[in-house]
Structure formats: structure tokens, C-alpha cells
Length: 135
Image 1 (cartoon, rainbow, N blue to C red):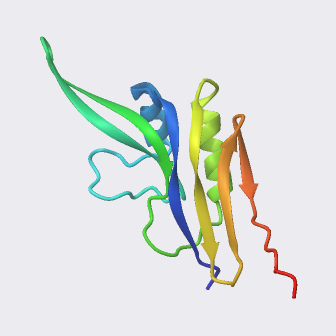
Image 2 (cartoon, rainbow, N blue to C red; image 1 turned 120 degrees about the horizontal axis):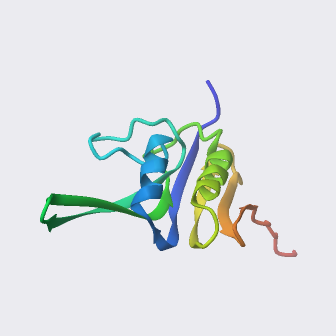
């Protein structure tokens, strides 16, 4: 058994992540490998990327540029390592990036709702405050 969570949203990255860093992220299963039809890496978060082809004198050059951190899984699942995965992605990317957006996580229990965002290069958990109206 275990506790299931649903993860929605994206954290967008500027500037886009270089091909070299995308190779490193793919090697550590933080991005879907281009030869795989579906993500098989087992991480809670991945860097989504675009693929471009350019014809050169030596043949076709294929390049990858990462643009967002997202959850590769549809539907509820066990997101036990989501915070550690986000911290590791930020560590791999290093300084020089800005992040916009958030990941919203909702659990099985009523009121189990929180977000992850990146502020000043650090991962932050944001928990809402429920305020009841006065009678």
C-alpha cells in the first residue's frame, strides 16, 4: 500500500537548459531518453525538452534544450522522493537560471494540498492556510 499523490503543473526554466546538461540529466534519469517512447526512469520529476535538427556538412545535428521541470506520471502515484528529485535537478543545473511556476501536489486526505516552487535557487514547500469565516 502507501499514500498516493497527484502532481500537476510545471516549473519553467530560463534560459533553456543546454544540450550538455540535458545529456547529464538523461544519464541520471531526470529526462526521458529520446529513444524511449515512454519515460522509464523512475524519477518523480523530469526536465522536459525540445528537440531540433540542423543539417550540417557532416550530417544531421540533433540538439536538445530543456525548458520545464514536470512530473512524468499521469494520475495519482507515490511521490515520496519529489522534493529530493527537485533539489537534485537544481543542483545539476547550477546557478544562472530563473524559475517560474510551481508544482501542485494533492494527496488522498481532505486538505492535503501543497506546492513546490524554486525561489532564489532554493526549493520551497508552500502550504496553504485555511481560514474559516467568522459566524
